[in-house]
Length: 175
Image (cartoon, rainbow, N blue to C red):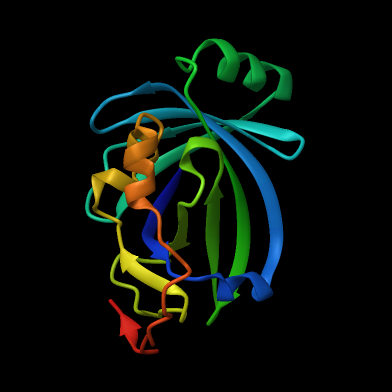
């Protein structure tokens, strides 16, 4: 068991790409969800996991993750997730001592790019990278369980148009 403390943000532009140190293709599906708990199956590279996430209290929650055989994960994704899976490419970017996970969604969610940062404690203060936009940690539209079932029109509304001007972002701390 691990305590997961993370914050989620919209990515404003592609400046993060030059600092990407790792890239993985992920496929996620939910075997079971409620308003407060979820059981997710995930494949990435040549490994697979089942993860149980408990009710979120603020930005933290308990997380239990177990490795499972890749063929079993593929079976779960194909037959036990209601035909709804997310596909994304995850990039790791280190900024100011923290590893940011940038998820570039594919398929119907193409155009949605989100960044998550796991923090050592709930009240940790960190420097926000210049490519980070609005925080969506508590916005239900950006939860994976809701992204999986959103329509193509709704997904377009959640994307950021990178063709617009890049607005300056302060390098102050975020609490």
